[in-house]
Structures are given as C-alpha cells and as structure tokens.
Length: 317
Ligand SMILES: Nc1ncnc2c1ncn2[C@@H]1O[C@H](COP(=O)(O)OP(=O)(O)OP(=O)(O)O)[C@@H](O)[C@H]1O
Ligand SMILES: [Mg+2]
Image 1 (cartoon, helix red, strand yellow):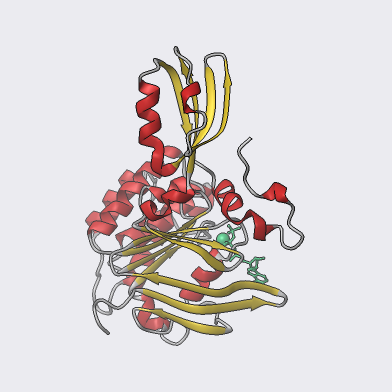
Image 2: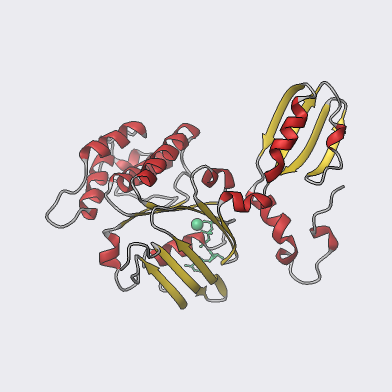
C-alpha cells in the first residue's frame, strides 16, 4: 500500500436499514495526516459511517477502504492502527477508570510489547482532570467520555475515529480536547471528527464534509466552505450603521436606534468590521451560523421535497 493512499476511501457507499437508506451513495476521502470534520444533523448517517469504518456494519454496496483494506474483512489488522471514541461511552462498571484505560492501551499495543507511553497516559489523565482510581460506575457521562478519549489519544495509532466525542464535556475540557487533537495532528495522525455543531469542528479541521440524509452535500476546506457561512452581528454604534444596508454581502438588516442586527457572508467579515470600527462601537456580539441554518439556506428547497413553496428560498427582507 502506497504511503499516499487515502486513509479513508469510501465510494458510492450504500447502507439500508429496512426502508431507511442511512447511507445513500456516500463518497468520502481522507488523506494521511488530515483532520476531517464530519458534520450533519441528527439522523444524517454519521454514526452509521463510523460503524461501517469500524467493520461493525457491512455496506450493501459501494467500496470502503481503510489504509487500502476492507474493514469488514481485515478488522483484526486494522484495529491495531485505529482508535474509536463514541459520544456515549459504556464501560465496565466494576473497573476503575485507570484499569479501563490500561486495558484499552494493552489491547491496542503490538504483540509482545507494552507499546504505550505511560507518560503520555498520565499526562492526559492530568490534563483531562480525571480521577483514575474511581470505579467507572461512579463516573458521569463526561468522565466516561474522558476515559475513552484518554485511551484513544495515548495509543500509538494512525487513525482516530471520533463520533461526537465531546458531547459530555464542559467548555474547559473542550479546550483540552482541541489541544490534544492538534497534538495528534502534529504527530501525523489522521482524524475523522463528527459533530452536529459547526463551531466544534471548525477550529480543528483541515477539511470538512457535510452529510445530509446519507449523502455528502458539501466537502472542502473551511475557506472553500466560507461562501456557505454567514455570521450574525448585533452591534451598538454611536453613529448610524445604515451605510451597511444594501451591500451585497449584508443580509437581513434591521436597525433600531443605536442597535443594528444583520448577517454578513463569511468571506466579507473584514470589510464589515472595518466599516463598523469607524462608527464608534459600544458593544458587539457575533454568532456563527448553526449547521441547521447553513443547511436550510443551501438545501432548503430539496429538504421540503416536491411542491416547494417560494418561502423556503432565502429572501432579504
Ligand atoms: N440499527 C439501525 N436500525 C434501523 N435504523 C437505523 C439503525 N442505525 C441507524 N438507523 C437509521 O439510519 C439513519 C442514520 O442514523 P445515524 O445514527 O447514522 O445518524 P447520525 O448522523 O449519527 O445522527 P445523530 O447526530 O443523531 O447521532 C437514521 O435514520 C437512523 O434512524
Ligand atoms: Mg450519531
């Protein structure tokens, strides 16, 4: 297998559960060393993709390869090279967190070796602020998730499959998570990171794919996807911000006294900030778009199916 072969290669992948087409001709490519954000709303097919990659589900048709191999047939060999963290972690209740972490690390080590760094393990335990001496049945959801994250991140693997891995973490731990993923990337590991929140994958991802109804609807670097994003800005200025109204990249403009609310296209934020700076800003709040807003704006028409009413297309009021 060549070193430049994709770490994950999926072509026209289909997986059906009875009448539900969970994966509908899905294509996905992840290069070595890439952190890939995998975004989609509930039920889009993110976890199904992960389970196919893990060799837990067999696709109905299409090609799926990890490191050039078939995860269904070559599970044993492939699982030495990858680690998986689900959003909802189940652990052995009668073991301590530390025992579970060591068990996972031994499982992933190569035969005859204790191929894991206890230094790295202890460092992660400390940074994630986990008490490894407690039985896991006493752990909260977030603590169970930390056990899975520490096990995955301390292992010497090439690929991390992370399915909403921070769902139970508080904002401080989310920061630690972002740091350790950056370190994993610096070590050359590849990461597939799923989420339904754009902001969570934005900071880490080299590329992002958006899945909806089992199909990838957008894929690219963040700057390639910038055309899709709009930021909502709420600002109070000493002078009127009226001059922004009517600009092609400003939408849904509302002004009331000193307060102005509008949306700006992701690739024009700078111009708007430059204009606002001259108006004497008293306060400003900017919100990134939610994934749902993003999907509705771009795929609203086919979301509502046939007989589309014009109200589903975005209009500037
Ligand atoms: N074992 C199963 N049996 C039947 N239907 C399933 C099964 N697993 C998943 N599905 C269906 O497949 C579709 C995709 O589900 P999946 O869990 O992959 O979505 P997801 O993107 O991970 O969503 P979430 O953000 O809620 O975790 C959904 O319609 C779901 O109901
Ligand atoms: Mg899921």
